[in-house]
Structure formats: structure tokens, C-alpha cells
Length: 430
Image 1 (cartoon, rainbow, N blue to C red):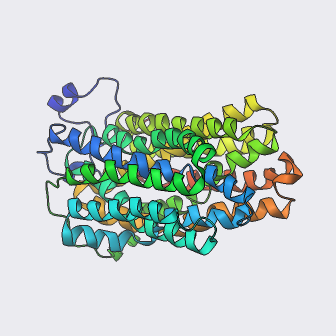
Image 2 (spheres, rainbow, N blue to C red; image 1 turned 180 degrees about the vertical axis):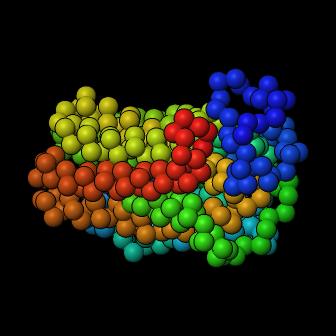
């Protein structure tokens, strides 16, 4: 069934018409501003994700330095970066309650203090693995978990037709931040060392995210945060829940291990940081690009394409990257697919369940990501060690590559099942 004539004139003529079903966003309010202060919200959320995603996706740069200092093995150090990301999933439902209780603005201010403050405190724990796990993993992790839910669900209160673009810009900040932070961290590490790098990055994070948090504004009161068990009677939700959970296992593998793989190729640490920056910059374009694509072919279709892109990069390109050229190509393609996953998930949830149910549905789906976030990169590290570690050369990385790529491909298969339930027509909007 096509949209009313007036709406089809308003939209770009090349877009596929979303079918009108009770599962799509037709239950949403029709008075969403589609702009106005919504663009301020998008800008502030993007500034926040610039630092959240930037620091998380640049952990590989610091991980190499800490490995060289003899603090711990890469598989152990990966737990610190994974722990921070893991709290996005572990605390999802609790964070939804926090947002409900004190509001998005106040919750974001608390998150800013935890995230930036944790970085500063980390500067006094650079010789302690346990200390870094707490100050750079757990404390910032609580903050980034709150930030994720604030920035992931707020655009849905301002946008419907342009929701994919809005979400793409918001999460795109993380990719852009990863590119900038990779180079910045490497520069600071060379000149002031690990401790002062943490202090400078932490204070800069506070200086930007605190004002941005104070500008966040809700249009509607959020629903009560609770587990809505009825979702699990919906096969679409079950597939999205499982598919998203599996997709997070390989998510951090390229970002954490690109610097180490570059070292195995004989590439300098400064060049390795630039390649990681390229991965993150590509992630920015992937987030915005796939987010925009949601508005044309549908968010579920875009999510599938993003996952397939990631899988192909890790299964077909990374294993044959024996020189810097193919390795850069892998980093660009993998970054685009990786970023696309994060921009399409919120839009897919909003498309299926409507903007009003996004916070609780998204919180429940994100909860499934905890195992992948916490164990995904360390598993790759364990596999790498099993085959001789980075000292054994590039061949030792291949089993970890195949593990990560297979997980992405399996996730794409589950999400394709969601699309088939929505519509069996491969050319229709979904």
C-alpha cells in the first residue's frame, strides 16, 4: 500500500515507498518538527559521540604502547577497552530508568563527569592493569552507556522522515572522533607520555561534552523503563535481538588490532595510527551514508548491507592484506560497514516499533550486545595468541579474521530474516 499522495510529493521521488503496516512508524506522532531545535539536538549528540566513539575506537593506539611497556598482553588489555563499551549493553535497562527518573539533560551531565573524569583519573593508574580497568574501563563505561541511550533515542522525538539522516549524523560523530583521536593520541603519546595523554584527553572531553549535555532537551516524557516481555513473542524482535548481539562480537576487532597488524607488516606506529584514523574516518562516512540510505531503501535493508560489507572486508580482503595497499583498502571498507551498523540499528528499531517505543525496545536489544562487546575483541586476542601472537607474523592473525567475519555474516543472515517477515519483496522499502 503506498503513502497518501501529499506525502509522496513531499519526499524525494527516488525513494522507495515504505509499506503501511501496523509494525512501521505509522503509530508515531504526526507533529514531529523534522528540524528546528532538532538539528541542535543532532549537533550536540554528534559532539558527544565524537568523544565517546573517538576514545573507544582509538584504544588500540594506547593498547600498543601499554603492551610495549610490559603492562599486560594484548588480549588482557583489550578487556579494558571492551569493558567501557560493554556498559552500553550491560547498563541499558538501568540507564533507561535513570533517563526516566532525572531526565535526559541531567543524565547526560552525569555521564560527562564520569566519562571525562575517568580519563583524568586514569593518568595515575598507568602502571596498574586493575587500576586502568576501573578508571578507564568501568567508570567511563558507565558514562558512555548513559550517553549512548541519550543520543541513540533522542533524535526519534524530533524526526520521522529524516530519522535515518539524523541518526547517521549523530553516530557519525563517533567515527569522525575516532579518526581525529587516533592521530591526536599518537601525537600526545610521543610527546607527553601515557599519563598526560589521559589528562589532556579527559579535560578536553569535559570541556565539550558538559555544555553539549546541558543543551539536550526532551519533547516528550519517556515511558517507564522495564522489560517488555511481549517483545519476545514477536519473531522480528527475537531475530533483531540475536542478530544485533552476534554483530557486536567482531565490532571492536579491527579497531583494536589494526595497529598490531600494521606492526606485523613492518609499518611504523605513526603510520599505523594514520591507518586506524582512516578506518575511523571511513566509519564516519559509513555511519552518515548508511544512515541516509535508511531513508531511501529502508533501515533494515541498510543494516543488512552494512553487516555484509563488514563480513566481506574481514573474510576476503584482510586475509590477503600482505602489504600496505590492500591493508588500507581493508581499513576503509571495514570502517564503512562497521559504522553503518551503529547508524542503522536505532532507525531499524524505530521503523518497526515506532518512535514512542524506541527507548525501551532499543534498551532491550542493546542488552544483548554485552557478551559481544566484552568478549569479542579478547576472543580475537586469545585466538591470535594461540597461533603465535603478532610476533609470528600476519599469518597468525588469519584465524581471528575468519572468526570476526563469520560472526558478521551470521548476523546479516538473521537480520535478513527480519526483512523477510516485514516484506518478501526484495525491492520494497523495509
